[in-house]
Every structure is written in structure tokens, then in C-alpha cells.
Length: 396
Image (cartoon, rainbow, N blue to C red; front, side, top):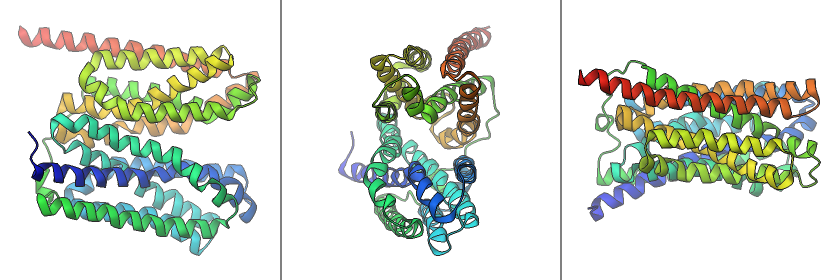
């Protein structure tokens, strides 16, 4: 039973996690700046696409190095570092608007900072009691997804009518303010229990990369490849299918992504690894199959299902890692696993685009993504057989 003392601590920690991931969701606002920056600096889409790629790689690196940083310095200082980098990434371009400042500030600074914030939020949620850990992970990652939906809506018109440098400057200042709120929540939690002490979460024993981890990482990559290929081309896929309101495909994807982020972790906690992985692959398969029909209603349903599994896989995997390797290892192992997300983000959109250029149709790209889900389903079944074999070996 949770006492008032423990509940207060949990609320402070969960608030900090939600604020950190909400700020990290600024990563989704980049597309809003493409046209304004293109006009202001005279850059082409290839130049701006490179900045997006650098930010994504830096985000992945930030998540990967978070476990090392959070062990060496207190959690409060980790949060300050993450928010300082996210804010500085915007402020640098606000002070000196150039392609170099975009690469160094937004691409590297904000990219690493947002990755640290994302991993930090996951670390906080994973540190909560087992009974509410999955729900906390879902709420934390749901904040990242919700930020990606809300911020473009809230900031869209304002960004289009504001000079890019001024917009970056104000977003940087706002990020610092959110950082103060997040740090205050951590200070509040520390006043109840010393969560800021790095000794509170000792670095657990080294874990070798085993076959189950590699299979789970492969499944993450395959699902993310299919999902990100569709996300990057959603409006174009709908337009190619002759759908007038093509933007609804993107809306359906983002709604599905939010739902998957929120319910994925609690579902994995209740349903177990095998059922969760099978449903993850089956839903992605059905979503892509629906999209390939090019029917408006099926495209809408397919977009929701694809978004659901893309958001769900990021929420599900930390829970599955915790079940297999212990809660203290979630952040460290997910930091390695997320390399698959970064790799999928780098190659999937480009491959989908090249296949469209070659065939003048998105059917080949969707067929490739369907094949990825079949491999994912096979990998999930192989993991189940591997576990059964290991249990038999241990019983002998």
C-alpha cells in the first residue's frame, strides 16, 4: 500500500519524467522550420535534411550515453545538462543564424540533449515501484508522443509568421523554463527520498549481449523500419492513392502513435512477452496490408494500426527488458537497443522514397515493409522456442 510519503515522491518523479519527455518532443517540430529556414538562409532541402539526420543520430547517441552519465553525476545535474543542451541548441541559432549553427546547435546540441532527456525520463519511470512501473513508462513515453502532436499544432502558425532566429530564441528560453520546473520536481522528490543520490541506483552487474536481447533488438528495428518508412511518406502515400484529404493519414498515424505509447507498456506487463510480440507484428502486418489496398477507409485504419505499433514498440521494449534483465538494467540496455531505431530512421525513409521513384508507386515500399513484419513475427516465434529450449536445458 502506498503511503502519502511514497505517493508524493512518485508524483514528483513522474512529473519530472513527463516534463523531460515533453521537452524532448520538440524534435517533432523540425519540419515546421524547413520552409522558413529555407527562405531565410537560402538553403536547399538536402542541406536541411542533413540537419534532421544529424539530430536523429545525436538523439540516439544521447539515449545511449545516458546510463553512463546518470551513474556518474546526480540525477538533478543530469536533468540540468539535458535541458541546457536542448535550450543551447535553439539559442545558438537564435544568436547566429547560419547552417553551421544549425548543425552544431540544433543537430548536435539539441539532438544529444533531447536523447538525454528521453533516456532520463525512461530511467526515472523505470525506478518506480513494480506495481506502477509499466504505467509510469507508458505515461512518460506518451508525453513524448503527445508533445509531437500538440507542439506542431500550437506552434505551427506562429513559426510560419516569425523569423526563424527569433523563433529559435524564444523556444530556447521556454525550454530553460521547463527545465527549471523539471529540476524543481526532482528537488521536491529529493526532499522526500534521496533520489538525487547516484548511489540510490547503483550500476548493476555487467550483462553480456545474449541471443534474446539480439532478437528483441531485431524486432525493434524491423517494426521501426516499417513504421518510419510509412510515417515519412504518409501524406504522399495518401495523395498517390487519390485521397483528397491526404493529411488525415498523418493525423491517424500520430493518434495511433500516442495510443501505442500510452497503452504499450501496461499491455506488455499484463499480457507477457510472447503474446505482446506476436500482436505487435500482426497489427503492423494488418496495418500495412490495409494501406496497400489504397482504399480511403482502409488507409485510415492502416495508418492508425501502423502508428499504434510504432508508438507501442518503444513503450513495450523497456518493460520486456525489465522482466528479463531487471529494472536497474532497463535504461542501459534500452540505450543499446535504440540503435535499431536510429538505423531504421536513417535508412527507411530513403529506401521508401527510392522505391517510389523507381516504380512510381508506393506498393513496392509497402510490400517491403510487410516482409519486415513477417521477419519480425518469425523472430518473435524463434525467441519463444529459444526460451523453451533454455528451460529444457536448465532442467537437465
